[in-house]
Length: 317
Ligand code: UDP
Ligand code: MG
Image 1 (cartoon, protein in one colour):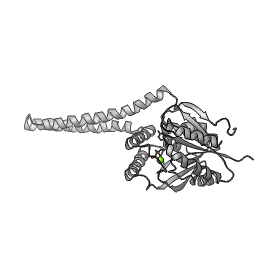
Image 2 (cartoon, helix red, strand yellow):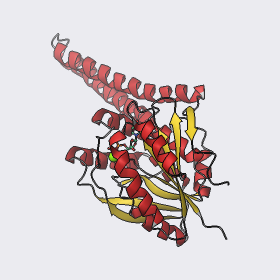
Image 3 (cartoon, helix red, strand yellow):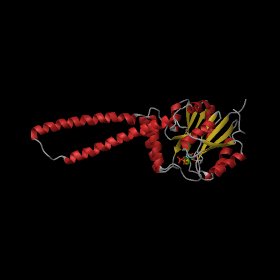
Image 4 (cartoon, helix red, strand yellow):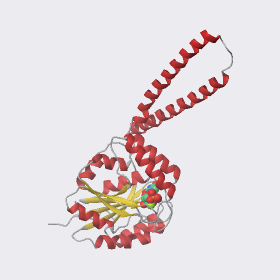
């Protein structure tokens, strides 16, 4: 019987400083797992520093390291998709280049998989390595998302997880081009186990996700998996209309009782401002979804591959 193959899928975007620490630690961790072969699929997501060259050097030194060079920066979600498409392993683990997720945990994921699970999630129990603001925002996001969307994302679970071939094939069959990976991972289901680990600080370099990028990421997540923000405007509209009817009735009665009076500019002005604002928010939310339909309707590829390194010398499937 041949031993199973693990594919570690790692997106790299301007990570030249982390690479020297990355390969020795990850390779020794994976070597330590018994009865398991592995390949490391490195996706260079359009880095502008020496990342690609360092990855090629690593691929030349170790035939289990494969490099996919994307034609530009497509973002982490697309880079992950590219890596998942290239992965040939029976089990696949997406992994960050900065070693924030300790590679030692992969052994635990494998042990759970051997118990018969299709998906093994790794939950961050300790996020001290992230800033206070990021932790607060993240917890608000999970709460809001899980209130709105039908598919719940498990709390504090990132892309770091183990998935079997069946799960990967299911994910690859998704036609949509805007991919919110956390949501998709949750959508596919399968037999799932959860283990806990502590997220560490980056070994080098700095985070690629600024506050604004994370905000957009959160919007992406919510609008990809819920249409409630669209529907809620119908109810809001009804409520506002009802209030305005009541107010109109009150005005009519008041006119009969007190006659016509001129004052009231202030309240009119305030309500005009308020409802213009409300309408603009409503239009903005519509735009968010229409933009999504527009992008989806173009059916563009998720990413373009410029070249591959080391792919031919690898395992045959
Ligand atoms: N990354 C990527 N493309 C991007 C941004 C990030 O491939 O446009 C990669 C990055 O190199 C790293 C992973 O995604 O391997 C996670 O990024 P980062 O550590 O900056 O995110 P954080 O851990 O702070 O959420
Ligand atoms: Mg990180």
